[in-house]
Amino acid sequence: MTTTHTPDTLHRILDHSSRADPYPLYAELRKTPVALQEDGSYVISTYRELTGILHDPHLSSDVRHLSRPMPAAEAHTTPSFINLDPPEHDRLRRLAMRHFGPPHTPGLVTGMEPDLTAIVNGLIDDFAGKERIDIVDDFAYPFPVTVICHLLGVPREDEPRFHVWVNAIVDSLDYNPKTDPKEKLDNGVQARNDLTQYLGGLLEQRHGRPGEDLLTRMANDDGPDGRMTDDEIVSTAHLLLIAGHETTVNLITNGMLTLLRHPQILQRLRDEPDLIVPLVEELLRYEPPVHIIPWRAAYSDITVADTVIPKGSQIMLMLASGSRDPARFHDPDRFNPDRQDNQHLGFGSGIHLCFGGPMARLETQTALSALVRRLERPVLVTDPPPYRPSPILRGPIHLHIEQS
Image: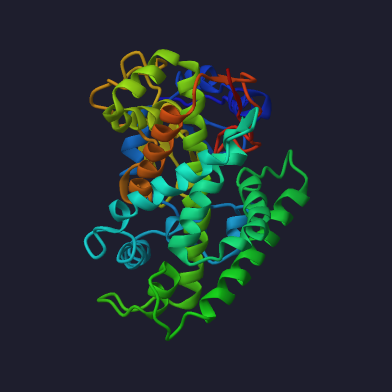
């Protein structure tokens, strides 16, 4: 099979003007499942090919296997396990999971349900007297930030500091040296360094001291795989702090926006509270928080859809496109919480399947259930709302609603 260049379609997807609705462009992109770009990289956009390569042991998440240097800010810091391959990835993921979920801490996520409910209801209580509510600033951002700060052991009062760093880091994820000012990359690098230094300072205080937060547990744990180094702990905390709230902010906001656009489903959720579980799964397919994995590398030559991707090539994975692929999902552009066999790519697939998925699911289920139950006749002020700059972590930057 001969691949074709589709630079215009990809450029339009990455352009901010398409952020509100990239899905027609994904449909255009899927006409060429494996598309060679002008810079020698490859874009994969169809479900079958995406799931196949995500499980391919010849696909690398390590930037060091790229044949050309990676300009992104991640290349300038100690990588977290999400950017490593086995066996390093497996060891670090096991060490992190010992303190985050089964089998060693099986009740961590479910045990937080009362606390999540209390936080959510407290935030909604604060809506009282407000004529207009910003679902992002007043709810979807402070909720998961409070949760991840508690889990990690990061002081909640330090949020204004790392909020600035996180914004700069996320903004630099899609840095393009041909179109973006170098300041965008430099700001991302500096923010990563600042966040690393900040987390390192917190870690120094945890060695040899008891505590239930994840930083303390990782600092003092001697499991069967040994103990993480301080650099490994900081890089893991770095990942958890960002991924632990950025994606959930988008998922909650995208969820509320989708419900406001589908008032019959919103009312049905009020009447059938148990609908929330399949509804969130459909949301992860229909309006996921992560749209693109911007780069992976080929360990060796890989054949995908009869296309040979040479060793060292950069590979871009269009996850949100795969989850709207009509070859896999019936009527994929319809939001249908009754959908069966919903094996979406909202949290990726393969060895890098998001290990924070159970927490993000529970947070979103708790948040949307409470909003639907407690808000009376919410009305969307602006549709489409303004969107964040990033095409990778896609979601509204504000979502203003009023109660009629």
